[in-house]
Length: 219
Image (cartoon, rainbow, N blue to C red; front, side, top):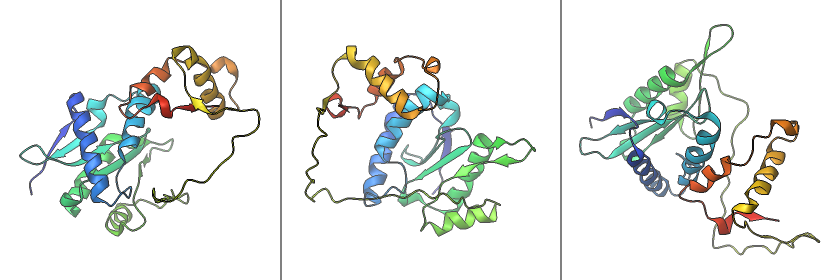
């Protein structure tokens, strides 16, 4: 089937991608062959909005059918990374080659010696993508990502709250500075305090469609 490549244009494309990832996740039997929806939301409203600040119209690419159905999405996470999100109904070697070529053109970073570097993720059982990457000169990293699953029907174990602490949902905006500071100290334990840039970034996290204040737990 002939697919058309175009760039991300408007927030309507963002919602289209969200629906696409929902469908793909279900079709792949809840296995993360592509990003789950929460990963996209986290990247879109926190990682990109607060950290990398990619222009979405220059960093996100869509492959569509003639009737506008999404077949694949290409996007970065950070600089020099590429994630190939493919609908299982449209998976083909031709599409993989086209997406990888686009990723190499758009996302590869130039190293000190002039060589190009690009990180592309592949499932452990995706032999076709691994073969394509090997044929194009990629080397396998020694730090794999492990995905773990748990049946939701299993009972939730009783875990006691440590003495002296209370677990509750995040309060109103007056608690945002403290919530932001805790995140800063947890993720930047060795950074001097003067590098802390305030808590405005947390408003972007809360803009994500999947964000729920009642599940934003603090102690």
